[in-house]
Length: 108
Image 1 (tube, rainbow, N blue to C red):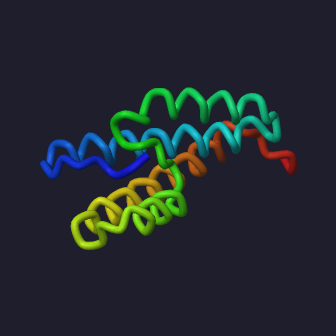
Image 2 (tube, helix red, strand yellow):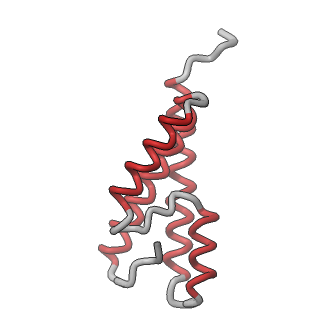
């Protein structure tokens, strides 16, 4: 689960798109499933199968930071780390925002 080695702009866009979509669906599933652990685990499993060869399937800024620190290639992967984190935060925010409209509010 390391950062991809290709340094092209198209590769960076593709990897960021996978991280954004994966984080979006994972956050959406966690919020909508309301504690059904099978649904969360199955979604995480499916997302890893889809994105592991393209982006490494991090889906979490803490995992991306840990892999970045563990690899030891500090300067060459800094833009990858920052772009991963921005896309993961954006996907998580959009997943939370969208799940707000899918889950009924118990106070209403």
